[in-house]
Length: 413
Image (cartoon, rainbow, N blue to C red):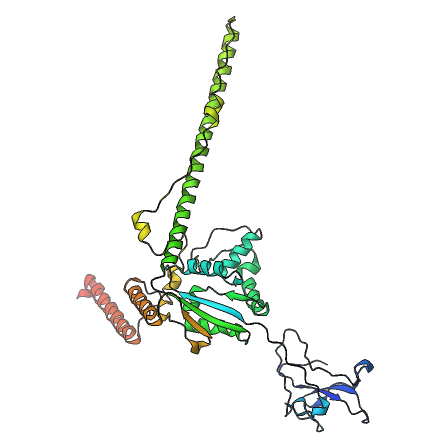
């Protein structure tokens, strides 16, 4: 049988062995019989029959009663009103251990992703679910990493791998559907989304099951001294890495110059030998000895010593090559940033760095400071301005017309 959109289908199970169609199953569509009664296999007779629906690429609404969606030509009991003797109640399933879903909430350029990395280090059983993690997984899988796009940021890397399923977001959508079924704890570090109430509510819907404990962790304001020490350690490591890269580049350039000089001297010696042979000189022209084993095998490089400047030691947060949120994206949403609350669906809201009142003040002051300097991308003139502008444009055109007429001697009269 084929079923169209919004079709109402009923499955009838007749367990009355003495009836003409006893121990059979039948399908009804819109209250009318759609198939002939089919006998229940003998091996299933007398055993519990579990109702289930198998479908693909469709949405199904299941109704167990007590009233059918489409009336049948006869009266029968639905599953919701079945007699106790006719059903078998399965034991309550063992509750799955509660898994934590952590939503970090912080401000751009204020240590957000450094905190996320620290949180993952302190909780090795957590998995990160974000765009930057997908990009990292792709790199570890051998996918060539192209240059970031114009609007690339730490929050949204905006990397085009040249693979349709990666570039159109299909991989992320699949992960979002599969993650709640994996039975793991997750950290969802979506900086922009976690600052917007509507996005937080939408993300929480994916973790609606009772086995998930949804926690919002707010990191705003002045962090603890341990976090500042960690940030300074990261900055020191970056400076050391940059210094080592510079030293390797310098050493490579020096080796290239030495190789070129050695080749030049060798060619010069060969040229002198040819000239001496033509002149019939008796004495052999000895080639100049090569420099003694590269100046005693090139001394081993000394360990690089780098230190933070006084200004760097005063910093609480570090700058990264990519901004946390692209300026064009930030300009359209920063005014709507807010703190999470339990009313949105969180089981717990933790203020990690400063209490709620101080964190709220930090957010308010940050938004106010942004309004003083941030370009407004979506500013649109109001209705009154449009009316005045239209009238002014009309008057200006009339003046230009009169000016043209005055300049024309033929029309001036």
